[in-house]
Every structure is written in structure tokens, then in C-alpha cells.
Amino acid sequence: MQKHKSGFVNIIGNPNVGKSTLMNAFVGEKLSIITSKAQTTRHRILGIVNGDDFQVILSDTPGIIKPAYELQSSMMNFVKSAFEDADVLIYMVEIGEKALKDEAFFEKIKNSKIPVLLLLNKVDTATQELLEEQVQYWQEMLPTVELHPISALSNFNIKNVFERIIELLPEAPPYYPKDQLTDKPERFFVNETIREKILIHYKKEIPYSVEIETEEFHEDEEIIRMRAVIMVERDSQKGIIIGHKGSALKRVGVEARKDLEQFFGKQVHIELYVKVNKNWRSDARQLRRFGYNQN
Image (spheres, rainbow, N blue to C red):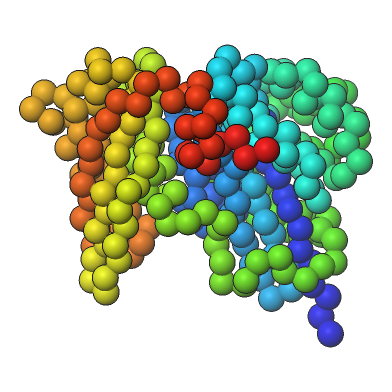
């Protein structure tokens, strides 16, 4: 009998270091949304990679920050949980970075009893001299962890890191069905795709005040029909999201539809609406409804 390996590989790090890009590179699908703005990832998202003799359950987490309101506290709870059930921990940093924005998390990494892979990302943007300097710095800071230089965006060294992950996993049967790609339902990816377009096209506070709820999702053989609500905290934000004669909202809908058609592999019809939901980011009941505050 061939031995089977399974385990949870959890990715943590500061905002914008490339965690979602890495996860998508491993999985081969766009599960986590990616933008240049910090705090793009709000949830803990699982991506499952299956082979004949392994199952790697990858977990993308929000970037580590000091929480300023209830939503951010909930996001940091997802990060804390990543320490609790990991078989392998990936600590991701980028060239030029010095340490996690939260010292307590950094101490947890230093004292981790499980294998930690420190991935030094964006090495394609660095000179050889800077790369050597960074490698030395991190080896001194975290002498017990394994360091791998990578570029998640250009797939440099990703295959080698993935093979190393499989080596480190414990022998175990698969935790999920072998044809499963993620733990999230289809509506979650609709919500996230729409939110990604808002992060790309709107400035300042708008993207962080938005939550998406897919109220209807009907799939036929040829087409998926969906209706989603974009929630904002104030009336003024509603006007900005809609734009002049609805032009801004229409652009979000068109771009989201294109991505969703690619994701689901069939035609998509999407209706978007905007509602005001005052102070949802600080309301524990609302946050539970949107899938936060699970602890």
C-alpha cells in the first residue's frame, strides 16, 4: 500500500507580502482575490491540492495588523486559529521587510513546535547583494526556521517549496473528498470577486466599508443567474459606488461577470444593488452573519 500524506499548511504574514498569490500558485486556481491594497483578504480561505498519495490543505489568512475595529479583530482571530491547527506553517515576508507588525505573533513563530518555512518573496525585484543581506538577516532573526527565496508572481521556486511541504506532512488519510478544491461555497467566490473589483476601482475608505452578500444564485445547464447586494456604511458611499448614471456600478458588474464566467466555466447573469447598512464593521451580530466572529 502506498503511504498517504495529509495536512494543513497555513500561510501568515504582513499585509501585501503575496500570501494570496502564493496560495493561488499552489492551487492553480484563483481562490483568493488579489489587489495592491492592504487587507484584501478578510477571511481564512482553504485551497485543497490533491495527488494520488497526498492532500495539501492550504490556508490563506488576512495580513497581520493591529486591529482598529471589530471587523479587524475578527480578521486577526482567523490568523490566531492558523497557529492552532497547522502541520506546517508558512511565514511569508518580502524583500526589505523587517518583522511582523505584531510582536506576539512573531514570538509564536520563533517558538513554534511545528515546521516553519520562511518564504522570502519578490526576490525577482532585488539585487543579488540585497538578497544575500536579507537571507542573512532572517537566518539570524529566526535561526530555527527553513528559508526559501521565491517569487510567487513569476512562479520562481514554487514547485520546490511545494515538494518540501509534502515531505513535511504527516502520514494521514485525506481530510476532504479528493475532487474538492476549497471549503467555501460558490456564493463566497461571487462575493469576493465583486469585492475585488471594488478594491481595484474605488479609493480611500470605500473598499474597506463594503461587504457583499449574494442573495440569489440559480444555476441552469447554460447559465448562472445571481443577484448580489453591495453594502456600505453611509449614504454618501452609496452614491460613490453607483457613480454618475450608474456607470461605476456597471463597470464593477461587467468585470465581475467576466471573472465569474471564467471561474464557473459557463455564462453568468449578475444583478447588483447597493444598500446602506450602518456601522456593520463594528456590529458583532452583523459580522457573524457575514461569516466573521466564528470563534
